[in-house]
Image 1: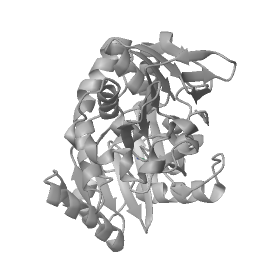
Image 2 (image 1 turned 135 degrees about the vertical axis):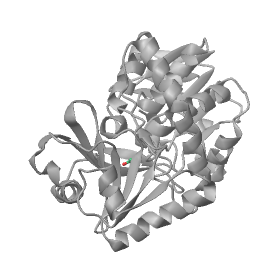
Image 3 (image 1 turned 30 degrees about the vertical axis):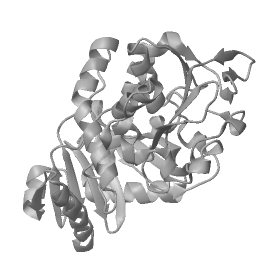
Image 4 (image 1 turned 30 degrees about the horizontal axis):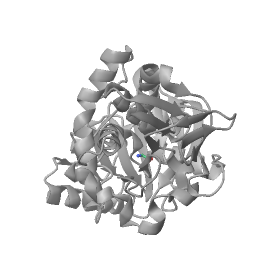
Length: 371
Ligand code: GLY
């Protein structure tokens, strides 16, 4: 089939690569591949650490995708020659003070109900497990929440789809897609994977700003730390070469994202309180991007059943989980393109759970611009 993927963030690239592997004639359109939310992402594969009450379907989706990651990372390495730095050292969920620890326990309640592994640690055990942290009230080890370097994942995927990449903004037309410089591509299917930019076509998607800060530290933590520090949520993600990613804000937002001083100061203060050794770290980069938020924090994975020149497939609204959910989304999208069955774990994420008249763009709206 001739398939256009609009958007080359981690989700669009994963979909394009999966479709290429399946033998389809794929083009992927983006003026700045990997330059959106993927650029800011810390790369946590953290369904357990981000679990919350009322989001059981999302937790199950995340767990299913997390289980794909070891094989996926190995395949990307073998096929592209790039190691995407998957680390399977788990995550420490930390409560800095007593009230912060109550918040941690609320997450553990969800994990217990779902039978997801964790080990609670008192303050002494927490510091024995992770000597770089300060005196905290308590913690829990989440042995199955890992992390990967999203920039390397995007680079590996880009290598694998390089011959299919069109570095241009694309619009959906009645027969497929067209670029701003006037090239048209007739398609059997169009996959919309434009992150927060999808909001012009998919009203359920809204931009939520996130800021991350990249540091270089002499004594970084040995694993991901996800914490509440006197009420402030913060995560600290160590990478190769002493790089440490600190994140992230979550702000409702409707313009181009720019990092703000107050947010950066709050995040760095929380990170330094949690890991005092970060005091002397170099500040390397501050990045702000819009995440694609949705009303229930879950993605929109579905296709347009209305008769038209092509099938429209949505892979948008991944909010805080674009990196985690990329491999599973790619498989779902391939099924949707090929008219196959969507796996049970992804069915709760049909776009029709929102206003069905609005959730998938109708043919009359397809001329609108995206990406
Ligand atoms: N998943 C991490 C974030 O969105 O900040």
